[in-house]
Length: 318
Ligand code: SF4
Ligand code: FES
Image (tube, rainbow, N blue to C red; front, side, top):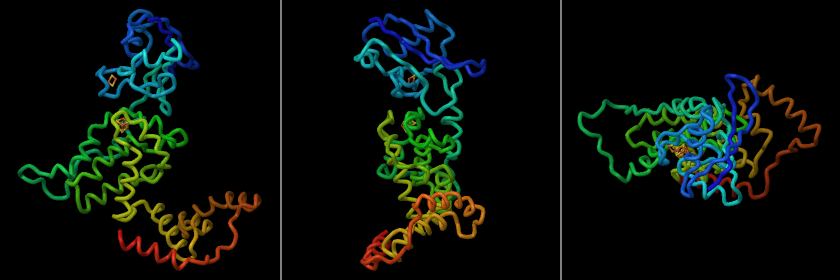
């Protein structure tokens, strides 16, 4: 089967613009995209850089965008990606500094963010002299997240990372989930663990687009895991001070008047004694005023008392 590979080329260390190189490759029908890249490197261009390790879809090393969709090259059959034509485009995954061609910076993309999750167990008490037995029912979900490939396909699909690369991202959050939900960490240690995932650019910066759920090669539903950790955080009391202020302002406003006071929400989230933070809001407030977008008077709505009772009931049942 004759296939045309169009492969992203870039060599930031030696300067120069990024470009695409085109290669004609003859491959058997059942070949994978990785087979083609290896054949190109062996027979046509030994300067081509790409990553692969296990060659069986378990290490996550070979993730690239194939025809603009992030996938593993080692498990993607050329027959599946050439249905619309004989051309296969290979580009590095989005949002990450490229080291060379299809090889991207795994430290910046994944490892630094995983390390920020403090991925090791720290039980509050002394280690038991025997095994620490845990019922399977409590461990099953945690164990599933342990099978994360750390491939970063979920981060590749994330809606926040293209605008804020410092966001920890769903891949690191899945690692955080693995420890937040582990029944062996309890008490003060559990609270510390929640503070880790709630750090700025973490749990609360997810915009719940749910894109990561559809990208995960292991079906771990990273977006849903983020939302589950938020539920746990609500139960334990939000650790991120700014988010806690936002949450409290929102609830108090709706409880008092039946609807959200947006002006108050913005100021109370920033902190009423945080003069520097409040000053930063001034240009936005001026723009809103000049464009007639500033919310008007905030008066109590009919039915507000009923809404208050609903919220209180929900709070009691937590
Ligand atoms: S959560 Fe899924 S997509 Fe994200 S790094 Fe782990 S295996 Fe890869
Ligand atoms: S080489 Fe390991 S997943 Fe592709």
